[in-house]
Length: 420
Image (cartoon, rainbow, N blue to C red; front, side, top):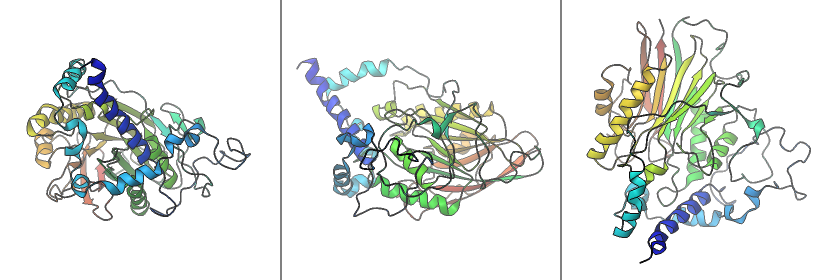
């Protein structure tokens, strides 16, 4: 067989994943799905008709190009995936199946090109912030599909984030550090927004999650597996009074991490773990790492970090990569300003977290309530906190099982920091 013939299966698989992923980000059809409102993102977008076609629709490549109007295919994938695959998706991702000898030989050099250290994080870089905005009327056009990059929506770290909204921690900017205990509500949620057939009903579940956030009103929400820019746009439309922090956005969100904050961040940063030769191809594409924000509080700035660690297929892989990533992340967080709250999908059991933590970070009081749907005893989503010597922290958490929004149950934690 020629080299082109050997590469053809991988090319076709990649095109399928891209097409399915783009289709998964489409709005739900008019006769189904959530009926939640989607307020406009920018108040100045269409004031004078700029950017609109004569028919009143958005004159934009991302909404006109037919590839991005594949709602019918998305709907077919959502309803056509067998339930065993929906319940246990990771085993059915094509790149996790045994590769043919020819394809494996072609992929091996790619693995050899990434001999990184599993627990090593890149140097911190700035992240992007979309500022909160007041709710706007329902737009007359469908949600666009493409990378959000309009300058009036966002600013880079280091620029003035502007004043905080009316919600959130009161008098956060003017309060004196060390003025007493500080309490924040922190939600962590892996939203399982993988391309079909690994996941399904993306927008329906995303709308349910947005309703959950509106009901619980966490100060900070730490999200994982939010891969497409269109998903971030939809969250922004549903939750306009939250500041949205992301890494750089291109065809997809490289780390899948997003932070929602009711207070305007004072600073932001991001970092990614090294890829290694042992990474499977899915994890090579998904650049796991962390995303951090520094938020004002009545007791002074608080660092909050969102993370998603390697999803191992066995204990050997977990020990070689996931546990090493967690150890490296803990060490990196110890070098950050304190107090610090770390949360996310660690893909580690509570006992693993306790062992690797070695008592340095304060952990949740309830470590027995599982967060993996289908396995009520398996807790892999955690919230922990680090304070300066002489301080203390108390973390009370609840697992939110209803409504079901993912293959993970979100965790809502009340973190009380006693700052010396």
